Image 1: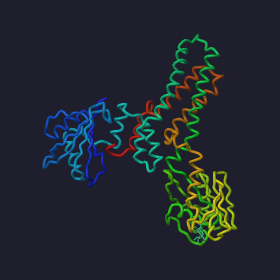
Image 2: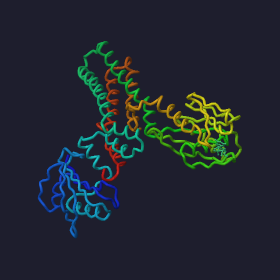
Image 3: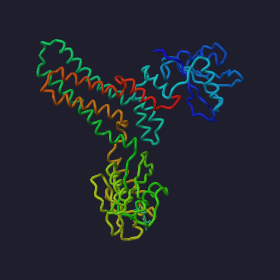
Image 4: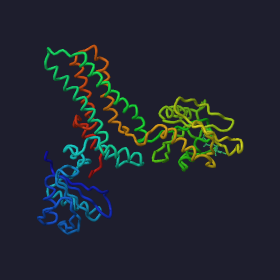
Length: 437
Ligand code: GDP
């Protein structure tokens, strides 16, 4: 597929040490030759220090050429490394456009890489996730996507479906063909096996979303037990207002901290109790919703005031203000309870470790591959729906109907890697990329 030649700044706009300008497409090499006013036959992957002609002045730049298909986009690519600076970079880009290129749209380089078969759709999404990664675990998950872990996994499953479909369809071509019981039992077993594998991926996907989005923790308890103080102590901030006036926290306050490469997102809720105050009542119903959406609940109490908030969610009972009961408080070794002082910071680090152990260590295998992208999860869920339907109706219908379900499953699965994705989906994914990527 031949495209127009595109150009964009690959480094952030502004005054930088170096600006990298990327050109991709059939005219990349001739544009570079015109830029240096020399018919140089660029050797691929070799840096050339050259004077570039910018009409009214010149600059020295490093130029590297990647010959198709051995480039990121799969096309001829030239990268110009010039001095940084908004005006200079813009002048070079304008000059390249006047020599026959056009400005790239956001994500167009990656989209071309996909269209030229250099990367799959999920690998492209891995690039975005890698750029946006803020923690070690997020970077690891996106690196695995980029390395093709999901693509390999999905392609293997699609091959299983292709093989079953090929066998079924070949026989359906002969209307007089009778499927033997052994044959159909064999098909059913393969479909069930595939369903089991995809089910396991979906069941684990909640863990992948925790890696990507962080662990959501609701801090609950009666007014004045120290919920805001605990949020501040855990995040080492003054985000929540601390007073001895009950009902100060009327809305959900959010703050986060990092621990062992994972983001923990805390939600300080309004004290849950019977209130007649209109604003406080809204805060209390939001607190209940926050509990529902959380991965872990910290049930906070103070001496002589147990937490009355009940939850079926994983939780830790945190007894606060132990500085007031010095000598009486017992530091429990339970994984579900701990005594702390949000005021003095006593045992707050132990609480962080306990939270990590309960949500990550006992739950998430840091070496395992998890789905972290909701689009991939949705594609696999719809694949599963077709497989489940095929299994359900298997013994009560004809093979052509089963085959139709399997084809739909095959198509939904292919959307993960992009082999069956339509243009609208592809455009939507690449529009999330930044310019020059
Ligand atoms: P919230 O209403 O549950 O959010 O409670 P706050 O965090 O606003 O705290 C209520 C009062 O308890 C404030 O006066 C805090 O200074 C005090 N407090 C919070 N944690 C502790 C603690 O660990 N020890 C002591 N002595 N006081 C605390």
